[in-house]
Length: 159
Image (cartoon, rainbow, N blue to C red; front, side, top):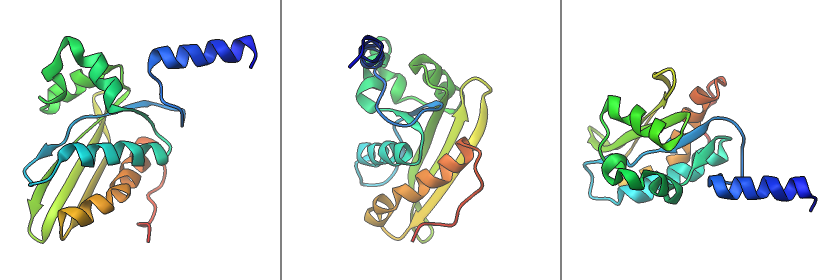
């Protein structure tokens, strides 16, 4: 490994950057939850699914390290606070959402907000019959969000 490659690797490690896609840095905040499920499991699966969709996603551990000065910041998000939390974390895009009951089961609603422009750049809504089915299909919600964030034409749902 050459000196410049070593230096680049050291900078990436020091910055907490994850290996993977280039592009805007995305922070997925903890989901609001009114279901009897572990919201952290859904948020973590969403982070990995967004990364697989081509977004550069900040992992939860790194977000917690950055938020140590204000530990409750990751849990308290209304529309205005979420953008501020995203900026505090150094994210270009912040994703916030909610797990809730719906008429036909359960729903995951998400929105991605550009922290500089303070503009919604992507949304996703996924409704399933059970929390397990919702968790199994989080990749579909990630696809919907990534299409908006990356400004790509919507694609049909994966089979």
